[in-house]
Image 1 (cartoon, one colour):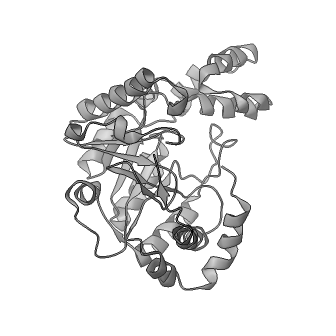
Image 2: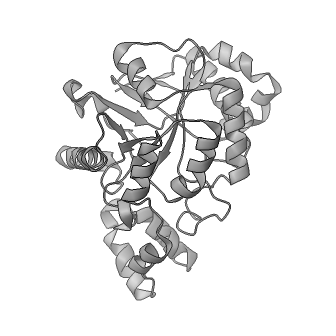
Length: 311
């Protein structure tokens, strides 16, 4: 999740101008920032993978977003995508991937206090702490010196279990003691409080590395679980890692009315009902620098004719 040099340059220079100018020049009305976790403790299963926003950083992020955008619900995003209901004001919708426990303990109270809706994307294999994502296993192994585990792919994930056994690391005990994921009870409480949920695959593979049948299984099985377990009347899916090399329009039937999300930043997408989100965790810089740079970069991409993700 390293930040390219040209983006780092924009993060330094773009905030010199009022953000409202970047909003105006970009012409963008909908911004979809996403996170995984917010914590002051830098959890060990995430520590070696990507930066974590602290509570103070996250609250500052939200204050910046609320100053420049109107928070909108997932229902409003559906209306925009399927019914062509445009946004008359700059708007944002928060999403969170992986269904981590901090979504309930840390993030939820802040969002409720500030009145901000959000959507949380769940991996069906991990809800209720039934299993641990292979990248999180790799981070635990890196913490005890097994840094080569960070290079392990989804297809090689069994090697992580073998390595853990060899060095006395018990993933099952970690799940039982630390409970890194949301429970069904917590998710239902959040749903009743107005938060929305979607699927994020079964166990977080890079979908482009799978066969078409395996891709469909990961998508359909996880969406079926989320919809039935939490009695939802809508379907949303966020691609794990990236949607590069995939055509979402070929994976979702128009009849299912599924809204899907990627993580390519502030871009348009050729696939119908597929929206791109922006990762907020790639740096510890404040939201003003991060978001200003992305809107400035969007202006440059539009000038170069590279604002749209083609499929």
